[in-house]
Image 1 (cartoon, helix red, strand yellow):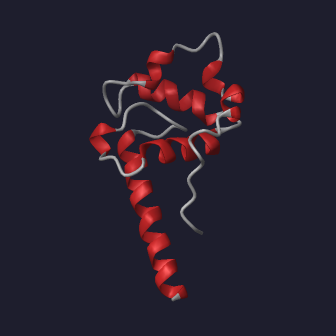
Image 2 (cartoon, rainbow, N blue to C red; image 1 turned 90 degrees about the horizontal axis):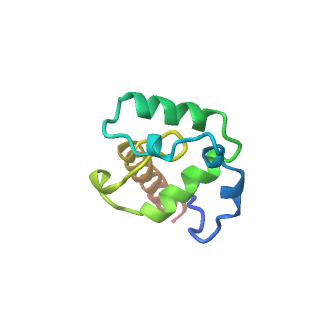
Length: 102
């Protein structure tokens, strides 16, 4: 698997996102704690979302190598820290694959 990050300008999928519903309070996607009730609510919305993988790839693309503490919001049910860890793992995996191919 190579490091895959969606182009940040590829946003058509956003129209299908579960979080765009009229009955969804956007504030739940910006919890003040990484384990609070807002995070649980946001993850519940994300769990049934049809475009969850697109959302995660988008977040990874726009955040790039930003430190975990500067990543805000819940994307695809993940916190900033979780996305940072995933980003670092993917980069390390891509580096190993390049080295193995050389």
